[in-house]
Length: 437
Ligand SMILES: NC(=O)c1ccc[n+]([C@@H]2O[C@H](COP(=O)([O-])OP(=O)(O)OC[C@H]3O[C@@H](n4cnc5c(N)ncnc54)[C@H](O)[C@@H]3O)[C@@H](O)[C@H]2O)c1
Image (cartoon, rainbow, N blue to C red; front, side, top):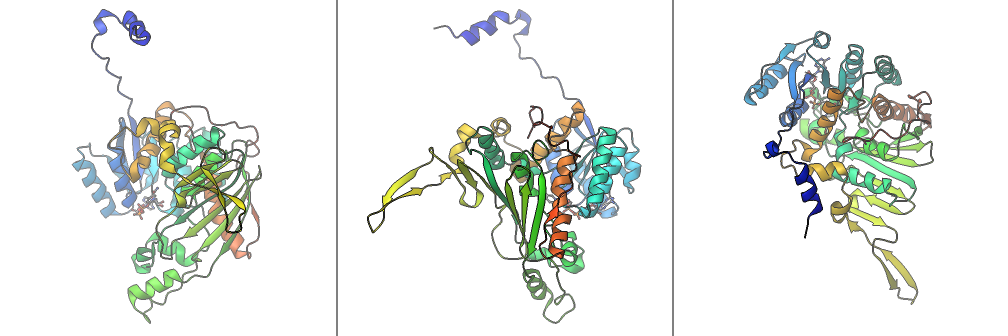
């Protein structure tokens, strides 16, 4: 029997091409990294495996952080980068194409804005905004320069979130109605240590709102086509009383000591409800001060199907098992059964994961750090729009300062600014590409 694919390609193959052709090397992308803390150590492990990614400059205000990162690069066998204490000097370097900004939450946005104004692509780490003004400055800088700013929201590249997006786009969930997400992570052990100066401790002492919204909001926003035919309209936020962090501080420092009795403003559970222009609702939960296993609390629900992270299940009407049973009074009823998420991988994995699940070494957080970095680096190389752009960054990060306002006003609804200035109505889905979300 003739294999048509084999015979067709064989007839076209020139005699001299018997050896496999070598793939051309990818052009280098020269990176500057601003902020050399714990996160950068993890990012460097992923960057080491990304072809063409070159760390040519680093910057931190702390001497010890610089020394530690230089040591890691040396152990990786990488050339020593130029070192800066002032990020503005780094941004002046012509040899830098793009910057990663894993600094503290309050400094991501001004640094990224300065980077865009200097013509450098910027990738900021996750976090929330302190004001809508700093988000407007970022959006205006991106619009004025045409340079893209991406949030390295690694959860947008998580396997389950991408597969659910795939299921939604194939129509298996019907019309979307409601989504949920959260950051529920018991961080009492270190966040209660106020004298250590941890950023989380400071924010939990002085603020009350959803200060870490993007891990699950990012994927949900992409699934709901936010800024591309849909947008966040308004939110309300409510905070519970604050107990968990204070109890942890008392346990750590001792009752009656100044640090042991310190007050935390942040409610143990902050619940935010967002309404979208197309009528969907999103509930976000922030909770880091109570004992519980980690969860991003994902839920995506439409008229035909649902994914629920904490059940590790998907149910699709007419496809998933539903069993007819009879109750004790003899009346029939239907029980709907979850199907394990893993049972969908083979058929419905997103193309990104179909490609990358075969790769053995994917770097931090089960590969998602590496996928987000690759998406950014490829966009820089191609001078293309990043798959998460300044409008996305602004919409997602604004939840933090808007939720603070809502809580401060007793749960009052707060409108979202339209950071696209109306462009969300006509903006279609992002052009297809290997990293498109
Ligand atoms: N995506 C994820 O899964 C993930 C995981 C961990 C942390 N993060 C994020 O990464 C970011 C950094 O976290 P981290 O744990 O590394 O914090 P860190 O405090 O360990 O490091 C931040 C570094 O930035 C430096 N810095 C701050 N302002 C600066 C400035 N103006 N110029 C130069 N350097 C400056 C600090 O000196 C510090 O070394 C945070 O936004 C955090 O939320 C993301």
